[in-house]
Amino acid sequence: MTTLRYLTDPIQWGARTVGFGPAHADDFERLLDLRIRVQRVHLERLNRFHPDRARKRFTAAYDPGATRLVSVDGTFAGMVSIFDRGKTLEIGQFYLEPEFQSGGLGGTILGSLLAATDADGRTLILDVIRESPANRFYTRFGFIETHQETYDIYYQRTPHSLTE
Image (cartoon, rainbow, N blue to C red):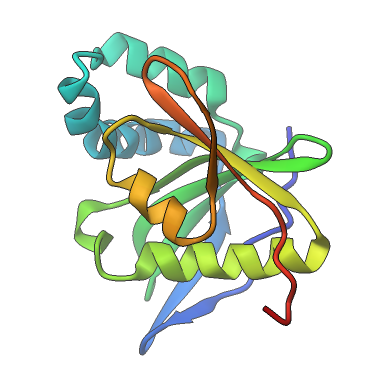
């Protein structure tokens, strides 16, 4: 199990407080449900959605020690998983409840994570489903495409100077 040292302290999102809490094994079902609700439409566009496949992939990737539950003013809002891969950190999963999407919360969370990883000199990597709006989101934050596979686009972001 991984121990996540990022996204531990609350941050502000306008007048609201964003909290981060540890995930546990018994959070699996609600986080799987969130993942399916967020990704289903994008996977269906690629003719790749299947509930059994979604469960199998999430089961293989879910590590409570690498996962933070996101709350806004005490209300569950999503999850983010960050895996230490040695020289890099991987954002494995970052899902927000639909009512918390497109309002700046994701950018606030990612901005906080980037400030911390920049200070530590850590490179971030991730992959995104083709045709997902998340592709535009990550490129706005300086992620550069490294390669593509049949259904995914892979990105990397090297640390930025704190004076940039």
